[in-house]
Length: 112
Length: 112
Image 1: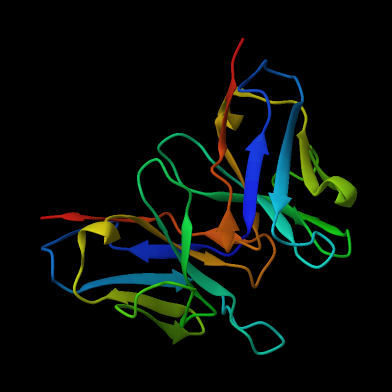
Image 2 (image 1 turned 90 degrees about the vertical axis):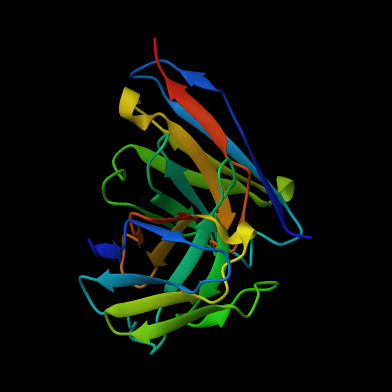
């Protein structure tokens, strides 16, 4: 199975700071069709995960442009510029290139 | 708009079978996939399996021997059945439309 390693496990920030989360895959996530099925989710306490980024760098409908996804192959990054209170929670990366699909273990973004 | 809602028993006895229903609206099951994801309390996310628009299914190999996913397109419902439940199957079970839109989740506790 593909293992997604997220770092850091937790991240303490001040509102208005930039935050950066890394997701490294044990295998390349580029599918045979050339697409990379790497997504990012935010799960707030007591809520379902919400899709932020799909296909490495595409923001889902309604997601603010302060969320930026980048990367290729096995190394991916989610950057959040100017962290706001509603950005706090647990971030997960997810891959749907290889079966079984897998999630990273999560990165908790909290206030310093 | 796209909506999904999970329903089923909150409590299941060990060794019994879990049956969950995901009722969807705002999209067609014949042209969209629906997946099941679970989350043990306080832990990360696990993809369980999904059913595609053509009715074919994919399962996580770790659960494949116990899991079945089916649907009734006339009722806009997707079903999950998993047998031989144990206490470590206690989790919140989510259904989602290709991981973009998620239900609220339903907590299933396995206990005698």
